[in-house]
Image 1 (cartoon, helix red, strand yellow):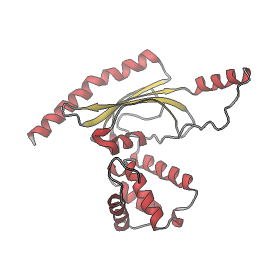
Image 2 (cartoon, one colour; image 1 turned 90 degrees about the vertical axis):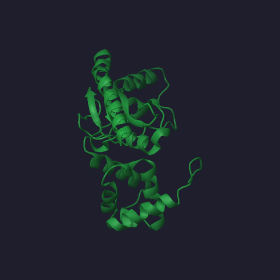
Image 3 (tube, rainbow, N blue to C red; image 1 turned 180 degrees about the vertical axis):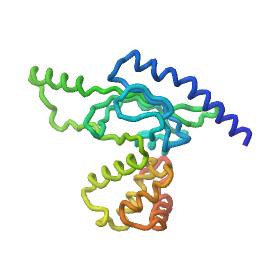
Image 4 (tube, one colour; image 1 turned 120 degrees about the vertical axis):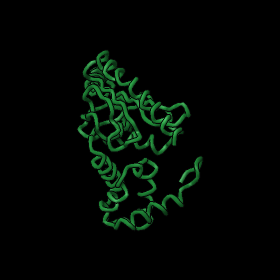
Length: 229
């Protein structure tokens, strides 16, 4: 217990030291930049410092699905730099997620930088069209990432994206498809959030007990680390 208390004090000190950096980065790069400092010990209100307004979150807000994926990876999580995603409102965002570790190597948070590149992308497309390049056939749009101050809304957005991807109703899922759903959500870290199991169960129309049963079965049939399900 004393060791854990000492580690928590160390993690708090790291977060305190990084808090001024958040505003400093945004002051340097301007209004198109947002920096978010996360404490993953409290997923439902992981945002402990924030500057800028790219994703519309505030201090005390919830982690995004990107944070959930970091949680799912645990201490194996690595920095994810210069990836491009879209917000639900259509903003094109270039981001970097840098994980925070304590002296034991345990991941406990992240420093995230988001840059709104919507205008840059539009200008690039215009210049490409003028140069006769146009849109590249088969070029995939960046994935939509769920951001929100309320963790329940983030979980709901992930569920909605899964349903749209599968192109079917929740009532139409058979047992195997429900197991795949719970396995996929678990791999993305959704169930690290309190009440997420009950929330998913309610959304797809099954009881709390059934939801926990599906999660247990999904975990029991998950391929060990290093393999593919």
